[in-house]
Amino acid sequence: MKHIIMVFAVFAFAKAYSQGPPITADKPIMLGGNSFTVKTLTEIRNTERGTAVYAPLMMHYVISSKSLVAVHLPFISYDLEDTSGSNLADIKLLGKYQFFRKDGTGKTWRMVAKTVQALPTGEELDIMELSTGKYQGYYGVVSGYETLKYGISAEVGYNWMPGGTFDEFRAKLGFGLPLLKPQYPNKQLNLYFEYTSALLVERDWYQLFYAQGVQYALKNVTFDLALQLPLVQDIPDNRAFKSSLFLGTRFTF
Image (tube, rainbow, N blue to C red; front, side):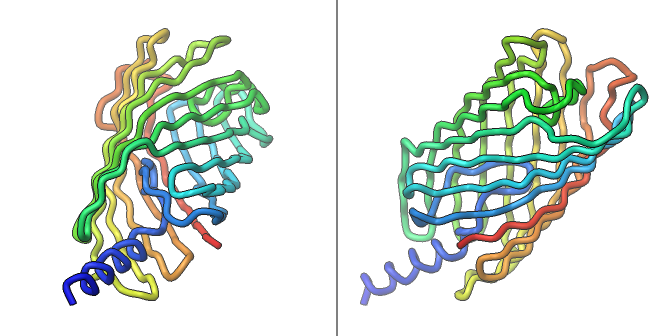
């Protein structure tokens, strides 16, 4: 009987946490090999320079419980003080490999190595992470600890831009709080509290952001909503960040 209860608890945990990463952060859990996730996370970014709407189509393929590859095809519409228009943004190729995993009853701790290769397909708009028109390579580590009551994720990495000035030390910290008890079929309502720290080395800029998000998941479909605001900004006044609104959906099959 003890073994049956343990198996059921692990099964419920897997179902309750199979909906992918937080909203503005990431997490290392990859459940179920040979599965696809199609998602989008539209960002409406307002700055002193103007407004940009970034809408990526993201296709993720989980090769196994340890590895994932993805391609992000983004579209951007912008109205900036010096230019406006709409175009394809920088296409991104993503890869993750899990190198550490420790499971317990109703809890798990995992770590993955992560890389994002941004291709110079967008306009040279000088918009960090969205459209730079220059090659970038990001290399980092994502760690996550999750239980049936809460989740914690952390990420540290470095973004390298050999042909530009967006070299960046990046750190993220996120907390997830499920408001519903684990159930099958999957039904979730989660709150996310997420922090992002960005230090641009060559420009000597620093920003610290906070995002408050809510997520609703039903079976294999997820809906995301988050508002990101600046906490600390050490950048030129004419490039200051005001806010970002994130709207997203995910479908796994």
